[in-house]
Image (cartoon, rainbow over all chains, first blue to last red; front, top):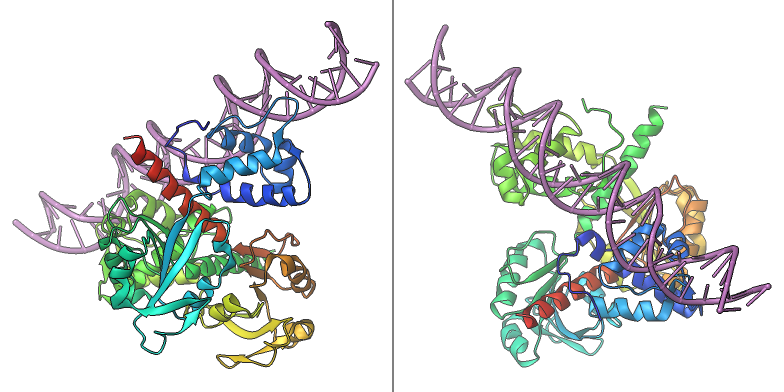
Length: 217
Length: 217
DNA sequence: ATCAGTTTGTTAAATAATTACCAATAAAAA
DNA sequence: TTTTTATTGGTAATTATTTAACAAACTGAT
């Protein structure tokens, strides 16, 4: 049974998926047990950090043995809520929306794509992976009918806030936002941003810096 | 002239693009000056943090006045290296690769897409935004010829490491990695990961947690 | 059983990041 | 010009995160 600590830091939470990914790889390789030290070596973390992180949720290991790989993997899946399903829709069915619709990572995260929406009449009616693109005016009704609780925003930044307003108006619980803007939503709505341009700018910064450092040598 | 501090923390660096984005918005709105307090209110940061962050790179403000919006925007663009151009190729021309190719965020970050590569013969020959998809065997030669220094990996995780090896073999400087795996590269190569599945799992965690918290009320 | 060797969970120490504070100084008002 | 007000840049205090240390406890071998 998990410890009930609700004040886990985001730093810890953002490491959990990486733990999960590597544990999955280990399971596939047939590794049954692992120590925090060896796991840390693989991940590039300190053993201490791994033990500290895992202990936020419970004592999954055993002295003199380490962690059972499969058991730990399942515990983390449980902590991440990957066993629960969430019905999702994509709003904005352009290139990015379509790529996300085809994204295989949905499998295994518990998210199920139920519909796609766009304002562009050329896109409405097209199907991506058996998901029909619908007109955005049908969205509210669809959310109710299909029990949607996650909205994925793949619109340009101009339309994003309005889409967010419509989604939250329908009591959606979470938004996965790919639009390059910060959304203003009620405090009980969760927003996870994927800001590609920011990621790219960080890359630009690091390249630029590296270059400057070399010039100064 | 910038201060020369090379030990800027990643926490600061990852905030720079957000500063840049909001400053651009302010320029567009015609705002000419702003105090750290007002800027913080808009961004959701403390005034202290903004002043502290900016001071890593230089004293861009003025007592009793604040910061000149346009000037600060340009300074940050310069710090981020957005004025320099970098030639990039996309490896993996599936849905995600094509979406990235169409991604308008390249404009304004200084990255120029010069080519796309795939192993799938059905894709080779197709053009996306005037960029021809080539066979991956032509990649090495193309990198030399077209002076490419950035590789964007949009392959499944299975092929990603091999692509990274080929890219670094050609002395590429940086990789923008969308494959759900951590790449092993020489230490002078910069890797910026966009791990969508990890982002999605964090979303799952937060939703799951919110639900648990509500149940315990 | 007993014992040597591992490895955890947990507490303490060290490091990093954020926030508060304030003297110095420029802008704006008087 | 002088005074008041605003606001920075930098330093100090606080808070958060990471790493180190170690007693407790399990494994596996003898």
